[in-house]
Length: 398
Image (tube, rainbow, N blue to C red):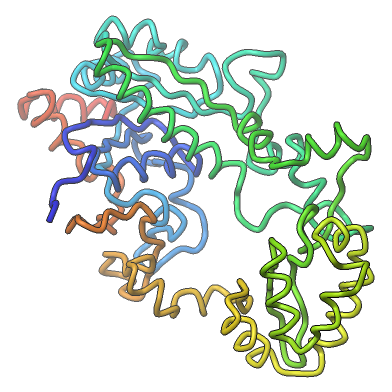
């Protein structure tokens, strides 16, 4: 059994707030990195004020993306606060920030400053539009990236209004690409001894996640639009309505289509020339959908799920969030974790999907109180004495 996480011994300085940056650094913490989150004295990460607010004042939003970190309060706008940050960078491996481009330079904490303190430092900058280009300085949120990156234009139902994805996919994709970039930079540093400045743009990441939409447009000349729950290239692959509720099913190849027809008692569809091959079914999607919808409406959802499941056809009910928290499969795989918060013992948060079957290590489910580790980090990492810590606190630097 392995009880050590892969990033054990790696120290990350987290200057981020809200979602993209914190989700990135939380994943690094799940992998074993020591993540020291620097926050504004007295206020902290903006998301500490986001609903839902628990008894005692903690934010459920903050808890969901900041577990396993240490919180240190430092005023980076002051020269002394910036100096503390540089001292921390000198003793760290990675710095992650999601300020507007140019902000780190104004703080005296740009990549050149960090490299002077630590030639091996890896700086990962996450922003809306990147560190270069005509839109680099424009403000952005998740919804802006989803809108400009094309995601909203293909989300929703035909003829309906563009829709934002139900989760902040603009932030989350950028966070995961940032993790990939950081892990790659750590590996490269092992060979070269040098760090890097990584530039992750939310808009870039949205475009990278467009799947085949660009190919469909360039080949057909038709601008892709929203298709509801169906897939643009695979049929059937969508939501269906049974007599008592919704479910999804997909047949992504001819063998699955044949099995699906037999399982639902519609073997005649296998020989229908409109539906012989996936390309045929996609071309005649509306006709096939109407046939299947009428058929599925005759029986309860569980009947169809049982028939399809026994035939090996991918299918599932559409679960709500409460049902997700009670799913025995997810519980066994530790994807639903009870968070450590004395004021809200029923709080649950998502676990880590990064599984190593041979490891006994589990994610830390506790998020830090604002400034909880300030004195500990200043003393243990930087070697400050009580007098120096007290002086900084009296002057509101920390």
